[in-house]
Image (cartoon, rainbow, N blue to C red):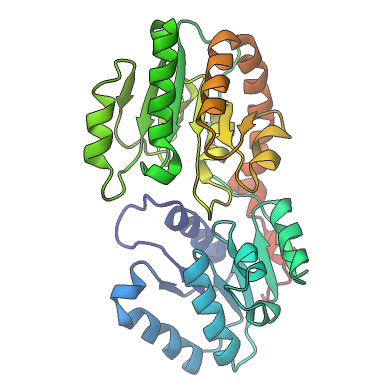
Amino acid sequence: MLIGALDFPNVPKAGDAIKNRFLLDWFRQNFKKVDYVDTQKWRKNPFILMKLFFLLLVSRIDNIIVSASNESAYKIIQILAKWNKKGSKVYYFMIGGYTPIKIRKGIFKVEPFKKLDKIVVEADKVKDFYAEVGLYNTYRVYNFKSTKYQADISKPHEGKIKFVFLSRLTELKGIFHILESVRTLNADGLRDAFQVDFYGSFDNGVKERFNNEIETVPNADYKGFLDLKIDSNYDVLASYDAMLFPTMHPTEGFPGIIADAAIAGVPVIAANWNYAKELVEDCGCGFVFPVGDNKALTDWMRFAINNREKLQTMRLNCVSRSAIYRTDNVLTSQLVDELEMKR
């Protein structure tokens, strides 16, 4: 049984729901019967938790998979620690990267997590954080993407440098820092040397401000929502020279767009959130800078504008790296055995 946001019957746009749809398909390929509890908007719908309690009481469930964001996962794991009366194996497929930090700060209690059979994390650094709070039942599985797309990087890009932002448009993702950097670079005489395009859905409260600001920046545009479940849209992403990801989000884990960028052969200029160094810099797939440091973001954008040959080398690294993010290479029958799940 998978417990997590699935956002049925809608087309999922949030990263957790997209990932959980992939997980659900994988479980259905490897197990005879798979149930799920869709926790999308569970705070507004009490029947979701009622369904969970009912299934725990009446069903024999071999494997319970919790795949939810930090707060939601903690509440569910607490419930399972008390109500898993039939000996189900329980796995926490971690969404985001903040849970071990909250345990360390005393916000979450560690005891419920000790009862989990495995905590499946998205970066090796997360395993280190869990070890610091005495939890060693971890297993690393990088975030993944279900696509057959192969980027053609045989020809270097020409013309102005094209930057892309592809994520939720919210202040904590750094969208206003990007616009500030664009204005600074324009004032330095580089206006005709680069372009920044934004893709994504808006969080509440930022759309009007964003639209007002972007209207004053001639070389920045909002392009709508880029659905990467459609393989041909990777061609759009692959046309860019570098992705901007100046996130300041405290719960950032392994954003799926980092995998998307690698698949499309696009280097990333990223804020150094908890796991950015491992996922971006160490593998030669981009540059990282201190979180919230707008000057550093501007400097790396300027570097990219003036060093296209370096970006071309990184494009090669990205494509090489992308193999470890493809669903067929991650969600395998062997992984079921490695996690010691009941068949």
